[in-house]
Length: 113
Image 1 (spheres, rainbow, N blue to C red):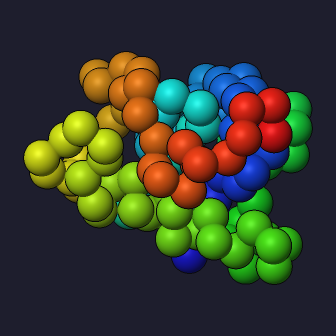
Image 2: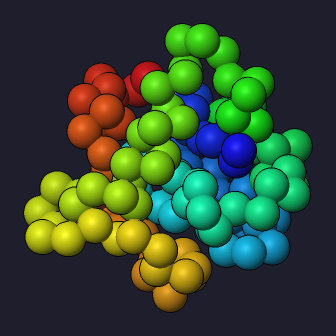
C-alpha cells in the first residue's frame, strides 16, 4: 500500500507535500505530482499539508479516483510521452527536477480541472 495523489492536484502543483516528504518520493510532472509507490514509506507526512486534499492512502481513495493508484505507478513503470524507457526507480525526485510530462490520464484532463 502507498499514498496516492489524485485529481485535485491537476493544474495546482502546490509542492507543500514535496517539501514535507522525508524520502523525496514525490515527482513533478507537467500538470500533476506523482508518488513513487516503491519509494514511499507510508509515513503520511504529505497528506495533511496538501491544500487541495489530493493525497490519500490508497485504501481511502474515493471510488471515482481509484484509477489514480495505477496512474501514479504508471508514471514510473511505463515510458512517459517522448521517452524511450520508463523512469523505474530513480531514487529521489530532487535530482530529476520537474519532468514536464504527465501520464496520458492526467494529460487528457481539460485545463482548469
